[in-house]
Image (cartoon, rainbow, N blue to C red; front, top):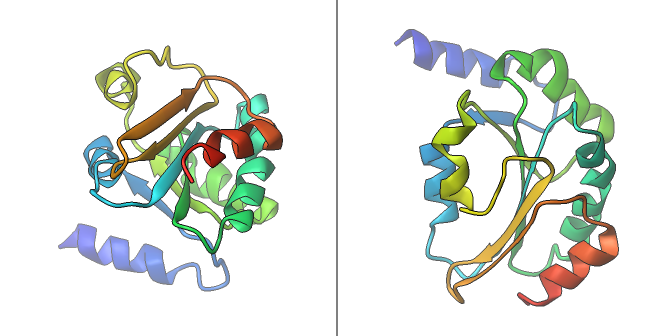
Length: 158
């Protein structure tokens, strides 16, 4: 019961902050990525402390905006510690005006889930996964992506 009340309190505690950042566990992310839908997902794994990640985030925002009328969803998965949610992640998201959905993946042991995202992923950031479950297409990038590279990669799915 405390958890439910705490959760409600957290939702109500930030009325002036438009962008919520949900804290999720890997099974919830896995479930979302496995949905049988014709939407193309662009999932970027990043962290506030990762320079290349921070540098490329505006590219994901531009791609989200440019594809707003298409079945494209950008999901930004922060790998910051859950304890940094209020101190770092939420202020970062607000300061940068991120409009894409942002979640914080609360999984302290990357070795327990990295391979499930992609067997070839070494764990370095940034890491981007583009997938469409209906067409069974999937592409991964273990590097910083320019807007042109990201747009070109996404075009192969549309």
